[in-house]
Each structure stands twice: as C-alpha cells, then as structure tokens.
Amino acid sequence: MSKGADRSWRRFPANARLAAITLRRAAPREYTLVLTASALSSLALLALLLAGRELIDELSLARPTSLGALTPVLAVLATATAVGALSSAVQAEQLWLLGYLVEQETTGGIVEAAASVPLAEFESPDFHDHLQRSLRQAVHRPWELTQAFSQLATAVFGGAVISIVLVTVEPLLLPALLLAGVPAAWATTRNSQSLFDAIQAITPLSRERQYLQEVLTGRQEAKEVRVFGSARYLRGRYDDRYRREIVALRIVSRLRTRRASVAGLGSTVVVVAALIALLALTVRGRVSVADAAIGAVAVQQLALRVRGANSAIGSIQEASLFLDDYAEFLARARGLLTIPALGPSATADSGQGLVRLTDVWFTYPGAEQPALRRVNLTIEPGKVVALVGANGSGKTTLAKLVCQLYYPDSGSITWRGAPEDADGEPAPRVSAIFQDFTRYELSGHDNIALGDPEHIDDEARVAECARAANADKFLTSLPDGYRTFLSPSFEGGTDLSVGQWQRVAMARALFRDTPLLVLDEPTAALDPNAERDLIDSSKRLFANRAVLVISHRFANVVDADHIYVLDEGRIVEHGTHEELLRCAGHYADLYHLQASPFDQGAP
Image (tube, rainbow, N blue to C red):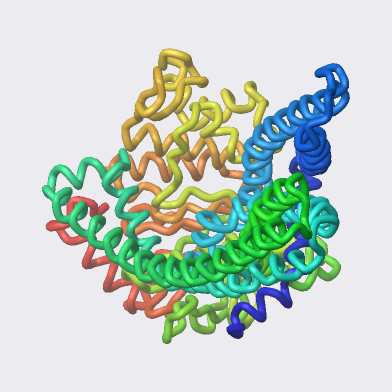
C-alpha cells in the first residue's frame, strides 16, 4: 500500500465522523430512509432465495400438488419482490435528494470559511488551489461517502444473508468466493490514490481554465474582449488548458483501467471456478438440483455483493482523501482567525487619537520586500487625514491595514489606545469607498443596505442615505425604484453611469454609521470637477467622522487637516499643506509637478 493510501486509511475514522456530522446536520430524515430501505432490500433478497429454493424443491419432486398448495410460497415471492422494488425506488430517490442537501451543507461551510479568512490569504496561490479543490471536488464527497457507506452496508448485510444460504449448500464455496474480493480491494485502493494525486496536480491548470471561462463569458470583460479582438486567443488558451487537463486524466484513467481489468479477471476466474465446482458436486450427487440452482444464484449474488463491497470501499477511500482535503481547508480557515483577543480599551480622552499606527511593518505573502516600513500615523476624531505619494508607495496597503483587511507583521494598530481585534467584525469602526468598489448585481436598495447588513430591511434609512449622497433621484426613476436590479443581466435590470455608481457607493458608506471613513481613490475614474465635488460631499456628509483620503490629485487634499507623504513604503513627510510646501521636499515637488499648466487636473 502506498504512503498516501496508508495515510488516508489512518485519517478515515476522522473523515467518517466528519461525514456523519455533516449528514446529520444536512439530512437526517433522508439518510434514515436510505438505511431503512437498504435493510428491507436485503431482507427481501433473503426471502426470495429461501422461497425460490422451496418452490424449486416442490416442483423438482414432481409431487401431485395443486396450485393452491404453492400459494404461501408464491405469496412470499410476490411480497418480497414488491418490497425489494419499493425499497430500491425509495433508496434511489432519497439518495438523489440527499446529494443536494449534503452539497448545500458542505458548500456553505466552504463559502463561510472563504468569506472569513484574512484578505492576505487571497494573495496566496496555494490558498486559491485549496479553495478550488474544495469547491469542485470536496463539496459532494460527504454525500459520496454516505452513499458508499449505504452501499457497503447493503453489500455486507446482503452478503451475510447469501452466505447463510451458501453454507447450507456447500460450506467450502464461501471462503473461495470471498477471495475473489482481494484483487478488487487492491485495485480500488491504488486507483483512489491515483485519482487524488492527479486532481491535486492539475488544480492550477483547472483554476486558470476556469478563470478564462469566466473572462470569455463575463459581462464586465465582454467589452474589452471584443474591442481588442482577444476572444480567439483566449478561447485557444482555454482549449489548451482543458486539453492538458484531459491528457493528465487520460493517463490516470488508463492506469486505473489496467488495474481494474486485472482485478476483474482475477475475480471472474474465482467465480467461474466456484460454479464449476458446484456443477461437479451436483453431477456426483452430493448436491440436489434445487440446492444447485439456488447455490448458483447465491454464488452470482455473493460475487456481486463482494464487488459491491469493494466498490464501496474504493469510493470510501477516494471520498475520504478529498474529504480530508476539505477538512484541512476548514481547519486552515479557522486557524487563520485565531488572533489574541482585545485587552481593556482605553478611554476616549486617552490622548491616543481615534486610530494610531506605531512602527508598523507589512509584507505581502510571497513578496521579498516590505510594502510598509516603520509607519507611524495618527488619525484624530473628526479630522481629515490625507495620504499622498507615487503609485506603489504603499498608500492603499496602509488604508487596508486601517480597515483591518490586513494585519501588520510587526508594530501595532490601536483604536482609542486598544489593539485592533480580528476576532469580531472589523468594520463597526470603519466605512470605506475603494477605487475598485463593488458593483453588486442586486437591487439599488441592497447595494446601499449592504453597508450594514444588520439593518438590511430599513427602507427609510436607505432612502435617507441615498438623498444625502444625491443618489435618490436616479434610483427612484428606475422602473422598480430602489428594488430595480442594477444589472441588465436580470429581467428589468439596468446599469448605471460611473458617477451614479460612485453616489451609490457613497450612500452605502453613509449607511454604515462608523467614526472613520476611508476614501481610497474612489473617484479615479471621474473627471477632476466631478471628483472634487464628490470629495467635498464626503467631507460635508461625514463632517462628524474622521476621514482618511487617498487621492492622486493634490487639489483634493490641500484642505486636509494633516497630510502624510509616502515613498517606497515609508512616511517621509507629514504636516499641513502649507507646512509641507514650506519644507520644499517630496510633497512640494509632486504638488508643483501636478500643478503645471499641462495637467488639466491641477487646481
């Protein structure tokens, strides 16, 4: 047995327990029906075999008997057949429904885990590979494991019933037939590990192919794909990645087929030998014709049960490997959320400011150089603080740390003197409008109310925030008003202009009542006048809150209460606009460069 197969068997009890817990949560009623139907089906098989032998016995003795004398046997045969058919129908339908219910449960666990981990995890290719494997492979494995357990229970219970019958015919046939399962057990164990290894190996290819599929079919990407005529190239690349996946799967399929064929031939030889032995015993008179007939049926049925048991074991082995991967993903997500809890918060008059960064360092996962180095910054309550600097200087990274989307490698971020806590919701303290803010393909109401999901049904508050952000006029003019889907992908839906989307994003930030607003270049797509108007609106609407502004246009930050200048991840200067101009340093150089007559965005 390979090391991987050995590991999966060692992990099997824990995975079986996880599957049982998942099943109990997802569909206890359906699984009980499946097991009950399986037991009834096996009992019906026993009744059929025993009644069949009795019927053959009666007929082979050629005794003068009436049809009425056979009525009890015929009644048992009819009842057993009906019970078997009904049980099979119930089992099939409940297993079909069970699949959906368990997939709902497992997918929900993955979605919850992915939505809860720190944002930095999404910078890791390994995390994306693990996430996709869980979504594409592991979500239905608990159901497969459950189905395999049901199949194994049916095979074992039915095999035990048939074995009793077979022992009454010829005891020596039983151990010979059980040996037929040895080659199949070897093949299924090795084949399960081979498939798991192959799926792991092609995950990066599969993830790239899935992304290309989204690009080729996505509404947002459709414009550029057509303008640049890139559809043919992207489709060719998509086909290439799919082809390479299929090649890898063909290789493992051929290997699995060879193993299964060898095992199948080995099992067939044993079964045929058992039937020949049974025939020889009948010819010699050691076994009656009735026993031989039932024995032949029992040999075939037991062989089927042995194959079924091996198939179930193979499915359990295979599902267990992917379920182990799924369990590791959930454990990984839970481990990432284990951060020390808050100590006692300082009081509001502690002199620490609303938010303070002290000697903060941060490096993106996989990066060699820090994105932020020795950053010290304070945001006072009710003040406007601006971050400026060249592209790549660390402005957005710093804003994301303030929003608790990332956590510093060293140093501290304090709120009223208390360390930020990742255990609870990070955003009760922060609202934000990012440059790449989300345009939810949901209703106008939902786009605003998602700023604070705890008040998702507060229509009056949604309308109030929309009016404050000057978004109410165009939202109320839509066919279904605030309930109109803001996407033409849905029936009756419509899209908005860039400026209108900006207003909706501002209304969403207003809807979340927090003491700090972060504006991370949310107006980069607007013309200078529209951008200045939106910035001024933000300062007016959030006058009682602290505002952290990041803007590439200096005209939008000159009125800030304090400006921090970043260069290569360091704060190189800070002060008011006038103080920084007097210093004639980095800020003054950038400001005068942008204020030249050749820049239409200059003040």
